[in-house]
Length: 103
Image (cartoon, rainbow, N blue to C red):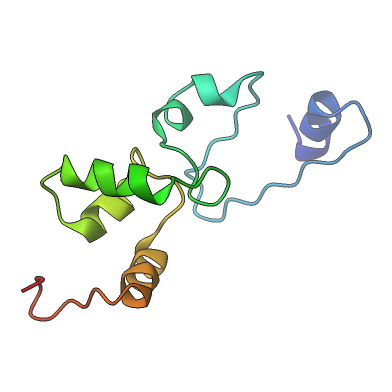
């Protein structure tokens, strides 16, 4: 099936779907409820759309024995925080990493 046929079959409301996968290992699935299917169903709350209250965040930190950066990168805990954002968040709250650990 050619791309144009696929677009026409999938999007009969006049909208156009464009997708490029130069590395050729991506998948596209159209679902009625994406939040109910893995891997999306395994994501935690979105860091921007559903921010935790500070007391909830502090309480959840006290229950875990994991490095703070590793916790921020855990997409099952909070979704949408990558390495760069985690570093920036920790810098902004004055958590500095020297010698690979917090003294």
